Image (cartoon, rainbow over all chains, first blue to last red; front, side, top):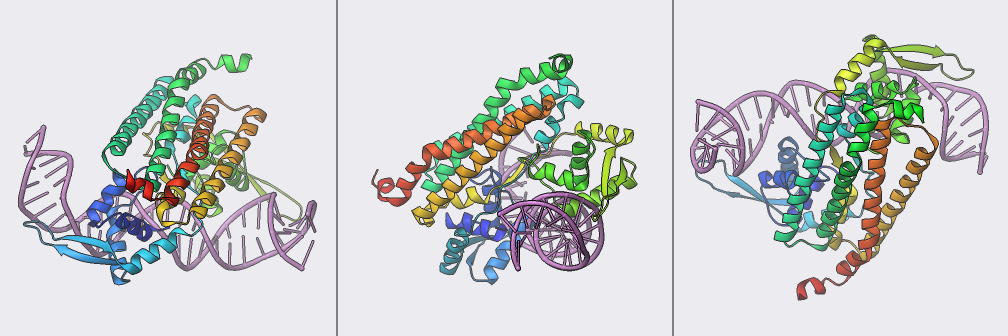
Length: 181
Length: 181
DNA sequence: GGTTGCATGTAAATGGTTACATGATTGT
DNA sequence: ACAATCATGTAACCATTTACATGCAACC
């Protein structure tokens, strides 16, 4: 499942420029489970164009580069639907936050507190954004379901951090309690 | 935060071979938020050895290649602790499952059901393994905290899928309900 | 007789990010 | 004055995965 398929997915929801596709991965409905940079999106769009899976229409703009608005062709839609039937790869997650935190005993407790507090704030902010998005935009059933799952997971993560923060701090501050029992 | 640091992290919990380090990412305490393959672990270990951050002791084995058991040196431990103080990168997650599911309306409902059921089974299995792991092994405070967070998140994900599965299936089976309201 | 587990390693290919190049407009 | 937003694109670089190479033992 490469960037080309991801672009087709964004375009299946309506025409868009490369710039707008990037935003879909940065802030939009895909932001919490996929990402792509300009350096991969623009070449992907050119390749898709060459393969006839997307159509490109240049919209002239004053004092800016032409905005290239891409849309799915019939072949592109078929290709995308077929790609969706493939068995999904395992999720890949890499969290330096969790890695670092799993060695909390090697860090000063104040740093552990800071890391957790930063992360809680980040989750709360993301949750807020996703709720706004849910309230504002009408979303197809699948996307709404996935957003709901993202919300459920982020809420669980934030709650866990809030509920267990102080316990961890106590444990890393007084390691004797662990050894004593 | 590259594979070298990840290896140092595993080794900070005790000496291990490359093969055992791989297992830590496959089944062990890091499996739900990081991964690494042999092709990256073995070169990383050689580089760390050359830099003096790990020591290597070959354990002869009959009819098998020597098992190379690595352990942290004092410099390795310092280096690792310093690396932990860096501000963690943003988590990167890529989930083809969520991507595909967000286009559920393009798939046959039976396939949507299958995808969700597979995923629920996967979460339940992972949760079981993590609970066993928690019951069996004594873990440092940080690692226990992180595992608890993994459990909380996986449970929330599995529950969401269980609770909302049928609603999504109804929506993708009768799209008229969405349009009608 | 085939797969899985143990055990290490290399080379090629992949797939992607980062940095660069360009440039006007709007906001602080 | 400086940063951010809009807008596209390329090239160099990077890290990692995949496939290959080797080989025995145990299990089914």
